[in-house]
Image (tube, rainbow, N blue to C red; front, side, top):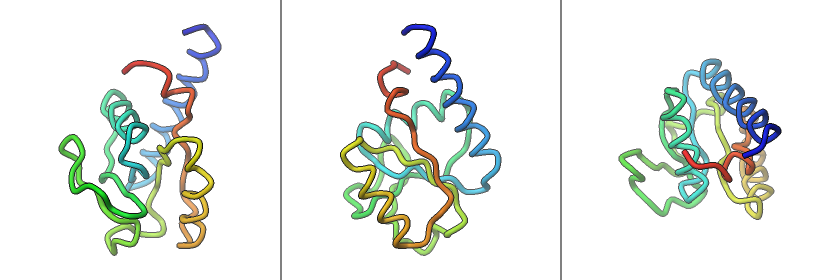
Length: 117
């Protein structure tokens, strides 16, 4: 990892911590490889979150964390969402969120995923 990667990594960590502090309920959107990387990073940063969400729920639990469908009534429009999916799915996820009137979200940067946690 070079200096620029480390700077971007630290900036993303700060963004995640501030986002989680600002929002009472935070969900990770995506329960695949990117979602697990985000989960591990959030554990490392010692920030709380509610669980994973997926458009079409494929799992019940990932690494001990509950997975819910985006349409679950417990997920509120004002909840914070960290999008943690592959680049090929980001546009679809953004469309799903906009269609359901979710506006409070950030992306877990793909550059963070190159690192080991």
